[in-house]
Amino acid sequence: QVQLVQSGAEVKKPGASVKVSCKASGYTFTNFGISWLRQAPGQGLQWMGWISTYNGRTSYPQRLQGRVTMTTDTSSSTAYMEVRSLRPDDTAIYYCARDSGIAVAGFDFWGLGTLVTVSS
Amino acid sequence: SYVLTQPSSVSVAPGKAARITCGGNNIGSKSVHWYQQKPGQAPVLVIYNDSDRPSGIPERFSGSNSGNTATLTISRVEAGDEADYYCQLYDSTSDLLWVFGGGTKLTVL
Image (tube, rainbow over all chains, first blue to last red; front, side, top):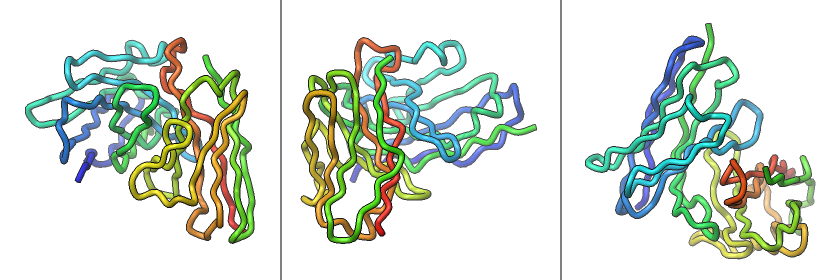
């Protein structure tokens, strides 16, 4: 069965960086991309970017350019997202989701989420 | 960027039908997906490509999309359907390739 297993909760100080992992199993990792999303407390879902697990190509929204980096390790079927220069308003649950990369398919499998708390 | 508008809340009695709308400019020309999120859980895809149901999703969940409004319909609502629901679409012309609505809290009375 398809699973996306994310790393554990993190507590960081403002200005620090965090790197969240997402280990995939149950399917051929390089056949699907990974999107990363976040959800601030009591708020909605916000897409943070996408990575092709096939060739490493990425797409980030403008507001996150330079602060977010997504990578993959195909040998371990793991995707990573690093967020730098953390601010208190980056406090959120961060999700990875399987993304086929085509408009007619949604995100069919999600990780359980990783809580990142940014506080001094 | 593309904006999706959802009502903040919808209430329905058990056994009745719930309809959750998602408004957007000419949204009928795009493929809309819907997610259910219960408290403390990750979102679950319940409808994709306007009206298709993933494996394991009850037939009570259906979707439609036309003009400027996409709609998620849950027939014969049960207490377990109480959750937040989000619409989503892909907009290649937008900086935010994947756009989400603000979410609708479904309350079962």
